Amino acid sequence: MSLMNQEWISKLEQFARKLALRDVYLIADQGVLDNPLLDGLNRLSPPVQWFSLYQGQPEEPLLEMAPLLMRLEPACWQHRQWIADLIAAFSCKPGLLIFLSPLSFSTLAAHLRNLADGAWEDRSGLVRYYDTRMFPLLMQHVLTEEQKAWFLEPVYLWSYRDRDNKICWLEGECSPVQATIPEAIKINFSDEQMMKLDVAIDAQQFTVSEKFSTFFTTQEEKFNTLWQLGWQAHQQNFSGDLASWFESHFEE
Image (tube, rainbow, N blue to C red; front, side, top):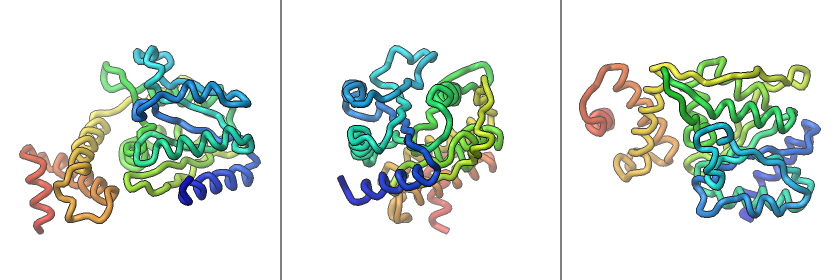
């Protein structure tokens, strides 16, 4: 295990001890991995509670591709090793969210499954918030304050790797006194929110290409700059080629 991964697990354990928690929760998107997780997961001892966020969705039969919520106890050596193995498997891959919460597994499973079920106008679809390229964008620029609270209030702390493989932390707003969550929630996206997500798709495509790379030192800097410029283009009703819009700003 790399030193960075060791430090990540150690910090998670430290935070858990401070909060008097035995468990660490992970959401792992099997869809970005070469092999599914279920065989290894089901062999762990003691048994691990897990839940597919595809449950109740049209994608439910695709269990080997599903994002899985898992409750793990780092004090159990097999569980700790599984956490380390997952962190290694998702190195440079966008699909591992880790968090700490005092809520029960069943409560969190139902809540996080609801958050993965979004809607826009009369259409419904998956909200892939567990994609760690999109999670910070959702929290910073896309979701309303109420929608953000659905992610923050049940959780003490979120953690993930960014595009540069840097470990990131997002503090939640959970209070042990009022650790409750609303029932039957659904993220209903507005037209503006959907446009922000469309801009993010374009920005991500340019981020992974070589184009404009000489202007940036990190992938995160590149994506965030391109997203801001793309959103600015939308606000100014720019209808031309987006690459030329970016070029015009970098040449200034």
